Image (cartoon, rainbow, N blue to C red):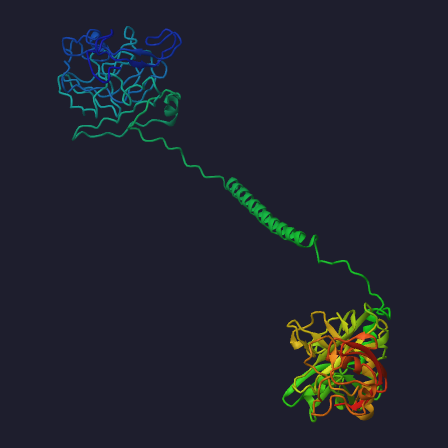
Amino acid sequence: MNEGKPGTPGASEGPDGDFELARPNGTGSPGTGPDGDYELRRPLDAAAAPSSKDGTSGAGAAAGPGLLGGTPGAEPTPAGPDAGTTIGGTRPADTGAEHITGVETVEHGAPAAPVPGAESPVSGRSGPAPVPGAPGAESPVSGRSGPAPVPGAEAPVSGPTHPAPAHGAHAPARPRPLHDPDPYSTPPYGEPGPWAPAPPVQHPAATPAHGVAVGAPEAVSAAAVAQEAPAADPWARYDPWAAPAVAPLQQADPVEEDVKRRRGRRRRTLIGGALIIALVSGVAGGVVGVQLERSGGIGAVELPQAGVEAPDRDPDSVAGIAAQALPSVVTLHVSGGGRAGTGTGFVLDDRGHILTNDHVVGPAGENGDITVTFHSGDTAEATVVGRDSGYDLAVVRVKGVRGLTPLPLGNSDNVQVGDPVVAIGAPFDLAGTVTSGIISARERPITAGGEKGDGSDVSYVDALQTDAPINPGNSGGPLLDGKGRVIGINSAIRSADGGLDPEGGQSGSIGLGFAIPINQGKRVAEELIETGKATHPVIGITLDMEYSGDGARVAAEGSDGGPPVSTGGPGAKAGIRPGDVITEVDGRPVHSGEELIVKTRAHRPGDRLELTLERDGEERTVSLVLGSSGGG
């Protein structure tokens, strides 16, 4: 291309000559290649299309006058500035040549009628072949190949046919086209370029001059239109002025639309259902997984369990001993004098006598209240029958209660270290508590009490030591052997602070519990039931409790200012003197004054004892019979 720079068009290549595309005419037609494709054709230049003397150019000047009905002998009309151009022509369908039809004005003479059989540039109707001698002539305007017009003839105009004016009359001026012809066929007004096909160019119809009546359009039958309609051309030219081809509206098939809608709805339903199923499945899977992780299975957790067995137990087992002893063990609630306490006791006989510790009933005093609660839950009021602080024992009695079962009494002299024992009581008011252990030691001398400060409430016990847990509230409860027989009365425990207290100082058991041997308790209980008082065996001497040496030393003077050895007493009769140190009782060592008292009270009045003593560095043995004194 020459980039739109117009030059002198010619048949041969000039300096500014441009190429245009020509539609193929078939094999051997001008402007086509051997394969019938488009080939580039140069526009006409001045040398190829010389102007005539009268100003017309191209094949129109070469043709003779009068061939298309012009006036013979008329002088050709010179081309002037107002000469029109052919606009809006169409290509004949049978020759392949194209015209740009339009309107031409001839200043001298009437417009020439079209040659019979020639194609109308406006309607594009087919007719006989072009005039011989003018095939392939180019259009004066566009240079396209097509039938050459008759010299002096004017291309017909689209619209109604008007009678030609008389010879010599001036023809009315034709309207100027909206744009000048494009000699270079540049799209969109010319032929399409080599890069892409374009629809055919359709220029707007000519507008008549002002004041010229416009006739009715020529009626064209539908059959003629169908016959004259050009065949579909994929290389059709683009016409920017043509109205866009609008396909007739088609109503969508409601059935097909409903089917599509139903399919879409069904698809959405299936997708939603799948999502819901996935969600429910995920939740269910999570629940099942948690259940399996937690319990190892689905459903209620059911652990393996043994079946129901007979409640009977071996009588010698802890369970068998507890089952036999619990109905005879009671809980005591004592109050009076601004104090209150809880302890344990056990039934001695069917008359309602109950044995317990003296420090349990101590808060009741002379007018206090004592309430006894049995294992069955029944309660009864009790009264004190007798008490002795030296032995830390007391007997109370309930009245109006029948069906009492006394506990059998054992023999504490038969107990050996390591024997199993069972302790029953109400620690911290928890009635019916059963613990078990063994006998840890025998003849453990202990002293308890002493709150009054004068020693009158100090108890001296040659106790049985056990590791069965004993806690505050167990005091007065029975200590049973392996056959369920009473071998001791739980009385004191060793507390964590190092003290020995009947109630343990509320500190609880550390595995050191002490019980009064039942042999001593039986004798004291019998005396308390018979007389209300207990007798104490005595030697008739006063001991020096400040002595720190080994053994028990006889004091230099008596506690009440009298002689340290009672006149006529068992000690005086045995020849004991002040300052003697007693080291053994019946062959068992004695390390302190308290221990001598404990060993002595472990016997009954009237029992014979053998004492080993030291005097002036010499050791001697004496024998005596224990005397008796009233208890307090």
